[in-house]
Length: 81
Image (cartoon, rainbow, N blue to C red; front, side, top):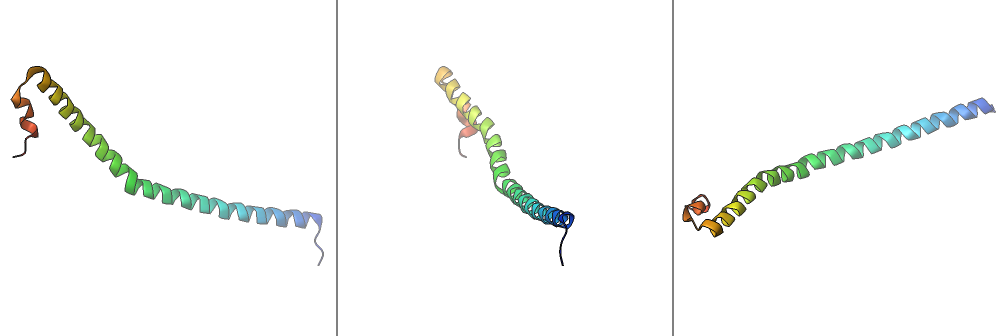
């Protein structure tokens, strides 16, 4: 069976589309896996850091206030009961 030039062109185009579809699907799967990893690892760390920052800032300002005014009641919130 002999193929014409148009049939070769259409077959090449079909295989190219199939190859790009498979490649696109694997790339999309990799992106989905990376998104799942970010959701599982990076976002909780970021949320914890954003909650920790105001506490550290409050502690730093309290220490600076103590050095300036020497009031012991500034440290009451940090003392362990």
